[in-house]
Length: 282
Image 1 (cartoon, one colour):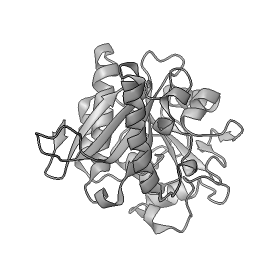
Image 2 (image 1 turned 180 degrees about the vertical axis):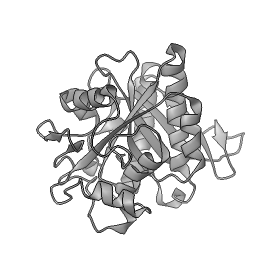
Image 3 (image 1 turned 60 degrees about the vertical axis):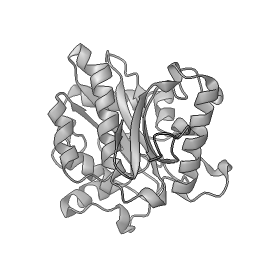
Image 4 (image 1 turned 45 degrees about the horizontal axis):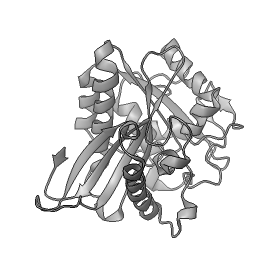
């Protein structure tokens, strides 16, 4: 557990495997409340049936909280308190079984932060907690790489990954082809699997363009869609902004699928020392 004077943070790996249904439902209720306020919703029916927002007893086998790595931030409370502090924010990632890989890939999927906590720098902290947890628990014992994916139309997020990490595809560093067969294999496995698509909130009928690594129309008419001219979601570097903007048809509702890996702890620590901008549905 980490903390400062405003909040404490914790990270849970696959909590659905050890928590009771009652504890899971209580936790999911907190996550749903944060998501409601983060998205500005007024009724729970507006929440997407996605990720950790699905009630555990309504999730498919192996889903719910069983395949998630979740970092949370709570308000600090006195040590004598019998109750945890109010949930302020969370990041939920999904462990994806990829055919041919002995360790699961980690999909960075959903970050929600209460408006009152958006100045705390929690996104970078969550990224560190979730990646570190997955790296140490699932990859280090096997001496392998941690493969990571994200899918979004938020160019500031796409650019943060491209600038912050190595071996990212697609990125301005490798604009025309995947840097390895494994990158392409993971992307194609996701595109061809209804269950992996569902874990990313990608409809089964959306076309995957392997040359650009985009899902065409995957966020059309969803809460995750963005406007091309909304500068809040632009990247600070013009070349990075231009690279991803040229791949996306915003009116159609496209998203870019990124694939990368970390093989050493410094691959994670280096980008986390710098500026980091990630948003919901990475």
